[in-house]
Amino acid sequence: MIRHAPALLFLAAAPLAAQTPTFTPDHASGIYAAGERVGWTVTMPNTVAKDARPAGAYTYTVRRNGGEVVSTGTLDLSTGKARIETSLADPAMVLVEVKPPRPDSTFGSRGTGGPGRVLLGAAVAPTGIAAAEPRPADFDAFWASKIAELNRIPMSPVVTPGESGKAGVEWATVKLNNVRGAHVYGQIAKPAREGKFPGLVIYQWASPPYPLQKAWVTDRAAEGWLALNVEPHDVPADMPQAFYDALPAMIKQYNTIGQHSRDESYFLPMYLGAYRAVEYLATRPDWDGKTIVVMGTSMGGQQSFATAGLNPRVTALIVNVPAGADVTATLHGRGASYPNWNVSRADVLTTARYFDTANFAPRITARSLVAMGFIDEIAAPAGIWSVFNGIEGPKEAVPMVDSPHNNLATPASERAYYERSKAWLDALVRGTEPPVAAPSTKP
Image (cartoon, rainbow, N blue to C red; front, side, top):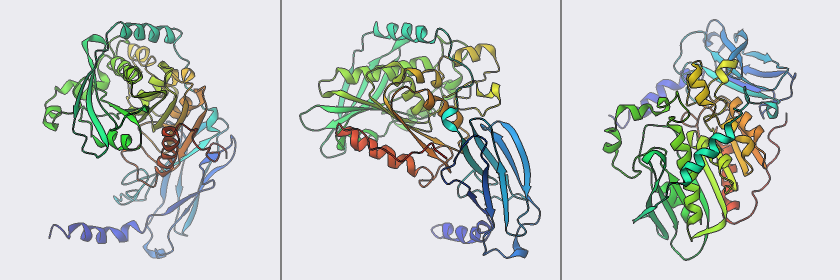
């Protein structure tokens, strides 16, 4: 009986899901020029009889940069077709939320927005989107002093080999000293042969502490990388799950720790640990002495941006829906991004600006691949564009028009990122430049 339950549930849900309208954008790319009409044609499937269509009107709300409401309206789909239209004169993201006439748990459940709503996204002249506020005047001096503090602390690496579980690959855990008596924990893998290999540092997404999975580095090592995967917290990376479950409650809300002081912020040792991981890789005799790629998703992308901005050894950056960008957004009518610092408080605002990835962007000269989800409400795409636009080195944007944050996305909605990141990694591990993609930022 339990084995057959999923099939029964699917059959029960299918007739309701079939009533969901489709939303076809005027531009499949999702990119529009400033002042151009931004629109979607909304169509009810022909398979839904007219008398079976929901009574009443769908409602929608159009927001600029995920915050300020631009317009609202209704969609009467009794005829089977309707339109959503707007236009913006200046660079910005457009986020549209559509709700059905009555509560319906299947509406939006197979893609955008989650059950009960559909989200639509577009970008208006996105290469003109800038951070809401300028960087602090002493931003560079602050980070130079912290790097100097870190450099005074011996790295003292402890490398403990173990079973890789993958033929032809060596694996070990790594422990390094960090500031404040903290440590950097991680895992490293490499091809099991003599030689020097390009370096890849992988940073992790946000969550209460969790163990790192061996495959995250062994799969890369099998491709030819010297791959180092860093735990973002000051805890060992290879403990049983029960160890992490038993950690104090406070560390599970780490984004609020030290938020009132730039010198006490939880993200200070996190960023410095990410920096030190690159420095450690560069000390190894099995590094090729040329290539160091930093890579991550969500908070892993946040750490990648900061590291690439702080450490000139980084030669390439690959990030998916990176967090931590444009942290003052809510003060300017924009949607917020994780870590969701309460910047309405003056001391939190002052602190947050030193960890805002937009402020690291002008220091990033590494070749950069940056993916943003147009309907992401966790890592706001306007903030990600503001970082991308500030990067000084060669760069490629990967707009994902139908994608929410990675933990809510489907493989199809994030396909563009996985295809482009694979192409980049395949080239970089061979020591060649990534293949040029078709333009992705033009209307």
